[in-house]
Length: 220
Image (cartoon, rainbow, N blue to C red):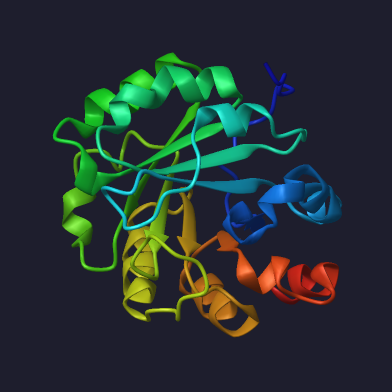
């Protein structure tokens, strides 16, 4: 099992973090891809898809366990029944377990289970999901991931509906980690930061760039 070093909480007011999505990396040489950007980012975003909640299938805990890095792994579970996978991702070395509010009828219980397994708890919502659905868990979670595309595939265009959600969340929770995922590039990333996001998830913009370090720096 991969051993992840003890890491500090990510709840840091106004601290901008870049979290590359490995969905856009070359899976055949995944650890090399991660090593190419590791010195320039704060965490890695790991997209786990089950082919049911979203129309794509990626990988599960066994692949995450094989990732060799000291960076925090922010595991974003776009899956049905996320409560079934909490223990597996703890054992795989996940730093954060991010679930979709659309996938559970007992979000507060799920957050408690994630914390009990020593992970940070994040909640995500799709572009078409109203922010009011988060009311029960917002005081409990360590982060909110605002989707700015319909989840399932990388390389999609940014949906501006995310910006108002970010503004509302930041106004209500000044110290909350607010991430945005989908269509993030230098232009849209700046809009998200202006709205109040402090974690930018970017996949194809980073891994598809001829100069990955320059792409990362353009997000800051």
